[in-house]
Length: 454
Image (cartoon, rainbow, N blue to C red; front, side, top):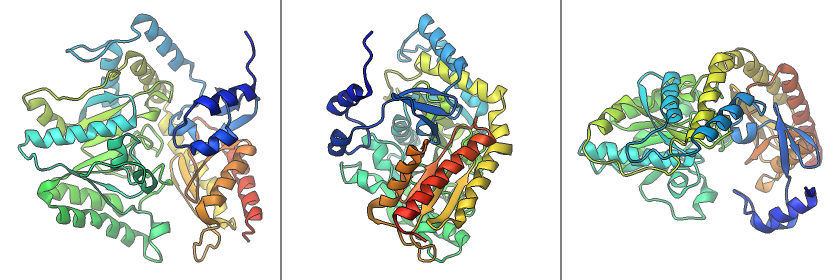
């Protein structure tokens, strides 16, 4: 077999591959990195450079890249039943077993699951479930959904409409029954106000928006426990209890988007457990299969499921690959590893606190304004002046530079706005956390020098 060079692959890629969330014109000129293999918590490009993956793929490889049990489960399933659909009153063994496995690790009151292929499709499904729920309750006017500015819920038309990313909204026409309130980002938007008072004020915007739109018209509020793609925005302690109160009092369904926070990332199986609120629907994807196969879905709480199950007529929604047997086999193996090896418990008691502790040292770094995080996810907000919180440069140039420096030093992290974001695999040891912190520190030092931040 003829060996393909890195240059050839990059040429094929630039010429034919349209990448997600990419400046096409710029990419055609510059090209990118070809990732060829991965092991444990490291990825390797086609030229052999080893890079510590501080982002767990795309928030999904919580167990790293060397889980042979998942590979074997998928391989075995492909040999037995590579595919069959779940339409026409049919199912398959992995789908049935995966549904039970998810119920077993979900909060009390969640006994049903609807499978999709991704978080985007799962949030589309949430809309369909919510509308169907209120139709069956003979409240068809309850169609409006409230979300948050700078929230991320996927990139299909419906999911992107739910999200509050302004640059995305500028590029398409979203659905008109989604409305947005402010995010609980105290550092960027709270000014000099008390953090907990700010949390209450932002939460109460939901109440005001419901009054504005009419309680009889509002169906649900959707939010991430921690905003991941928005920059790892950890809400004040007062935020979620107030959101819970409002939804309970106003007959508004609460949807917890756990695509990033789920499966141990925040220190519990789901982020809603970390922040102690009780949603009616839970969106999941990503780490449910450790990224080895596409799988997403919605955990449906008993309040909603009882109405759906008791209603006459077909639920007119589904996907060709819902409950795909190979994907579900990967999910079963992933959850088994996490339970048998007590991954979440071990991480929450040791590696996660150590990561947060080690990152706190950067609070004194000249270009870091805030270090925030929970469990195995964190962000460092870059600033040019700690007192005024002024940006270092326009267009997030400093964060982009810092990210590129980190990658050059062998660490994959993400730049979100002016924040440096990391979410390393939960299977790291302390030495690997130290390596992550050291490489991130070098990138921060280079950024401070490049932009003359003292």
